[in-house]
Image 1 (cartoon, rainbow, N blue to C red):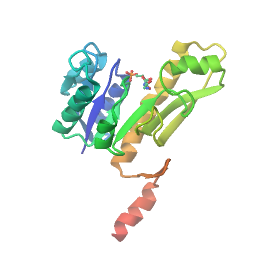
Image 2: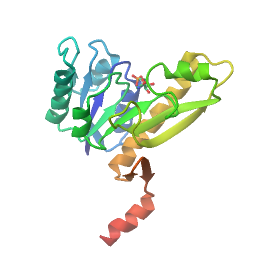
Image 3: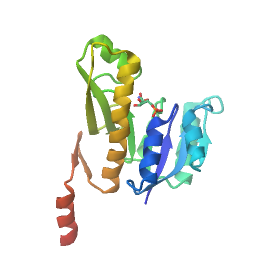
Length: 212
Ligand code: GAR
C-alpha cells in the first residue's frame, strides 16, 4: 500500500477525489498526512473527517523559506511518505524538498501545460482566447509547472464561459485524472525518459513480470 502525503492550500476537492478512490478500493494507497500552509484550508477539514493526520505549517510561523520547507520535508519524512501529491498547493517548494522526492512528487495544474503556468490560469486561458483548455498532472521538477507530463485532459472553452464555469469543467477532469496518475504510479507503469513519461501497458508489464 503506497503511503501518500498530500499538500493543499485550499478547498481540497482533489484531495477528496483521492480519498474517495481509496475508500472505494480503487487506489491501493493510504494518505499518511495532509499538510497545509493555510490554517483555514477546507482540505484540513476533509482530512479530519476521514481520520487522516494533518499538519499546518505557515509562513507566519516559519518566515524564512528554507526553515519553512525544512518543516514540510520533515513532516513528510516523519510520516513515511513515498509519494508526495500537491493538490492545490499554492506555494513554490524549494529545490531541497523536491530533491528529497525525486520523481516521487506530482502536481495537478488547471491548464494544458506548457500553456498558462502559474496562477489565475483559467482567466489567462479565457483572455487568450484558446478554444480548448484542460488539466495536467506532472512530476514536479525545480521549475514552475515544468516537470514531465504524466496525463492531460482536454475540455472545450465555450463562448459563454466565465472563469467559474471553465474552472468547474476543468476541475471535474482533475478529479478523474489525478487518481488515475497515482494509480499508474502504484502499478509501476510510469517511466520517465527526459521530458517524456511513458505509460506501460499492463499486459506488457505482466509478461515482463512473468519472465523474471
Ligand atoms: C485546482 O484547480 C488545482 O489544479 C489548482 O488549484 C485548484 C485546487 O482545487 N492548482 C494550481 O493552480 C497549482 N498551480 P482543490 O483545492 O479543490 O483541489
